[in-house]
Image (cartoon, rainbow, N blue to C red; front, side, top):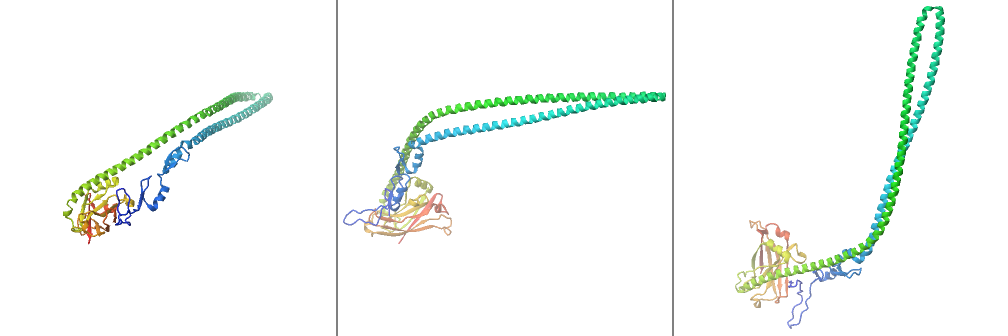
Length: 468
């Protein structure tokens, strides 16, 4: 089975009849018209069902055809499908704004309530302190009254004591005039004690008066603080009421303004979606043009390579009669392998070896290598096949051609005894028709090529031995 120039394979089970009738060729692979990928006939129908590049019409009837893989993105950006959603989103945003403002108002009211509760608590503490001061003042008044009563009692007792002692002194004077001086001294001592007591009573009275005045001053200050706090609380309540009125007016104004803004927003969204659709269409066209340019670049590179191969083959064809390598043995040195691998990844190039023959006046052979692979092996393997091409002695050779050959990747180790070559055996069959040939491909993973010493100094040695 061989690949023709269009990239599809042909079935070799049908041959050209000798009477010249047309043979129906069965394509084993088909190309998807949308993603340009190749698939077997068994999986092609299933691929069309799931292919992401198939164009489908928008279910919102916006007259747009979008690839299936981008339909979900288009539905999110479709102007007809999003207009009602934009209105709903605008209403939701407005409701959310109102809810947020109400939540903020509730938080402010809670803060004001907490401030008022704190003020009430402080007021209760002040009232309690005033009550305690009044009680203390009453106790002081009672104590002062008791002290005055005690002083009066002490004065009466002292007067009685003085009268009694004067009487006793008079009696004693009558009895004994010698004790007169002692009585006079005792009287002086008693008078001194009374003076001291009088001074203490006066000092105590002054201190009590000072305490009373201090309590009165504190009471007046507390009453002034209570009046001031009540005035501040009243001002705060008035400010809160004015703030709520302003918020109510702002909300009403914003409701009216948001209705106009929503209409403008919807129009702007429709225009933006239209521009996005135009941009998407332009991007798709640019992607298609890039794909076309890439295909043309690949075909141009392949054409240039084909022309170089043709020039080489034409020059070689003139020397076919003098092929030096006619023993079925070829050693091919592929230099600049890394560069050729990168070109194969970009342009899918094919490397062609020099022509050789399996024997003198035998079949003309050529080894073809795809450095980046193809099909399911693409990107991970090196693929090669041995082709039987048109030669000068094909009319004298037996057909169909059946050959067996060993493809060897040489290990460039310093010692031949320790070298381990990579060997594959393939079969080559071809009928006497350039379009009917079964090629057996063999693949080598890139990891294997890069291992050991198969690739050295960016050169790869491939050896072909045709078995007899």
